[in-house]
Length: 179
Image 1: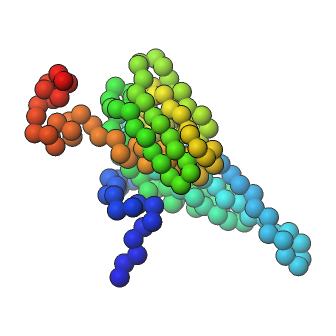
Image 2: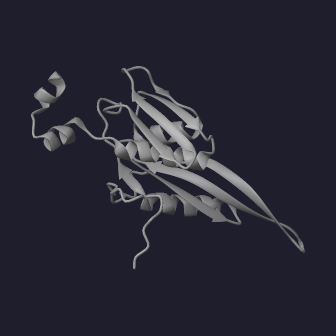
Image 3: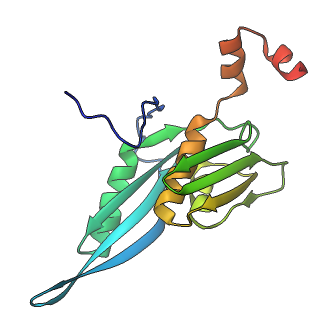
């Protein structure tokens, strides 16, 4: 029996094939962990990285290693395996959305042109790499970068474009924006 991915919770995500040359990467957090052994302390590093093309594709990854550069490289490789496509509408998101992962909760709202990315910490990195230029965002609950990044990715993966909504309801785009 195949083991189900616990953070996916049965939802299908839009996986995207990475185009290696276009992807930008951004380090969100680097954590140094000390393990005390008989011979002294052993340090290792855990890196959280987000990658994206700035045009609606974004992914996150975690890498752990004894060396900083190696942990970042592992995180980038992991992030390239977890890419999703985000619908963008005139540089912002199509509608308000909440995301949740563990104790981390986020709220993202579309914003008028010229507003910029109003978000803090880990959420700002994810939204900028995704290519969102105008958005209002708030992290609620946990401020742990791991949970905030995953909650932001969850919120972005739940977004639906107006074209997709119109197709699901079997109505025209004009009728969708009327009411």
